[in-house]
Length: 188
View 1 (cartoon, one colour):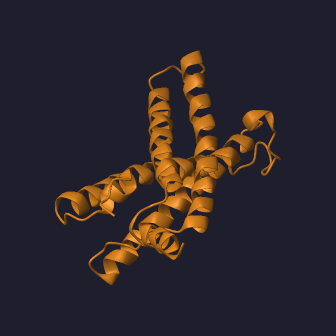
View 2 (view 1 turned 90 degrees about the vertical axis):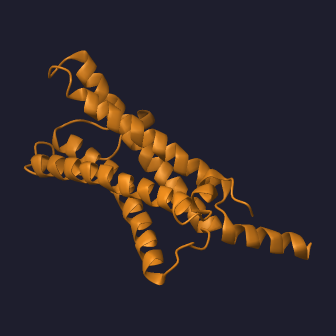
């Protein structure tokens, strides 16, 4: 009994919970779909069916990203995260900061998208549940909201690249278990 508890708390220190791993990779897939759909949108003529489909997919996937992020944060609160493998306190702070920037962006971008659409007079009804109107339709905030949503979305490309580079350098250069922990394959 005591060894089971000790074993579980030791595992929490050295690896991510399976639910954390699931939501991490689900978010990777959802982000890929969101990015692909919005990039494809530009290939079609304004008002065309394929362009509208790309926008619809992007908006729906954005809503799924928001839900997945909320779930990811709940899992983080319940199960925690493993101790950082950083070799210095500064590197650990940078890693933790990067994660929280991701969390803020992945929660904030869908909210900005909803506000932008509502400012343009569109009703948002994920899963046939109409969201309350949070901003006045036709508001002068539409263009700034769109610009901020696009700028932060582009910043996300850069941050994802840094995140992937950091994970790969941890694995191949520092040769630690960081990447393996998120794959659920570390040698515990």
